[in-house]
Length: 302
Image 1: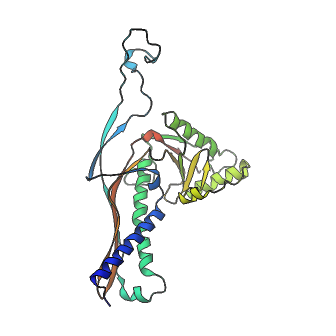
Image 2 (image 1 turned 135 degrees about the vertical axis):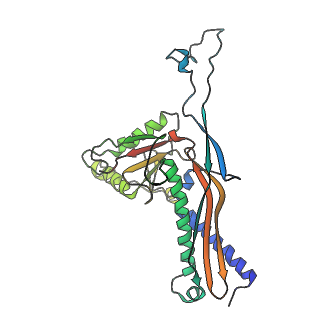
Image 3 (image 1 turned 90 degrees about the vertical axis):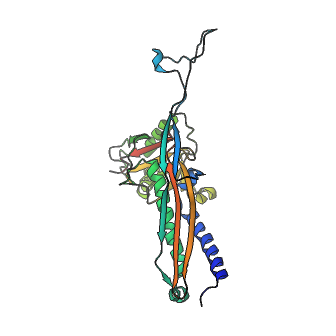
């Protein structure tokens, strides 16, 4: 029996609510970036030069002219530098094949709910992947390959990478990353350490087998935020779409801003007597506003 108009609307609302729930469950990086809306598809934004203001070197002096100023002297002028950028929003869009009314009615698995979940996960994963691509400055053709240009970066100190029990030293690499970010005056408290499952495995092995540390304990708050553990003040998150042979560190709600043009939305396209199609979309763009609040450790696995 075909849905009446009222029933179709109710089911659409239920499915949209279900889809949003799946999206909240799936995202990793979205919760660590600043979120704001944009009313236009073309976004003009400004990137501030990192660090504290000081007197310019053009004064022919290598010393700061802010300190030790003579009585009655004029103050030195200091100014901030900004880089103007323009970005365009991206559409993340997917649809399911037609799900027949027969499959919806008598299939053992819940075909409709499963299809909603998988379509939403597909869209949300690509949106989250875009945030990752921006943080690692990846090229368009290789969206998960780090291409550090403006962000801080350093190779792992051990010649054998983190997977070497002899030369690998992930703790030193993480500390070097914190030092690099802090050198640009950013507070590194709560820094996010994003790892592929391979890097996470070798980090854990180094902590427990090599350094003899106890296994880090989970907290209920950490589990809610998909943080698997805390180390050196960093919140560790693990995902398959983080590239192996590298580790990403960044200051949450500082390094990157996600400009949302259209929120995650889903729709059920009903063909009476035939079946239903699930469609899901979102539009927005990630902006690397503070590249020096990011550090990439390369050559982590050899």
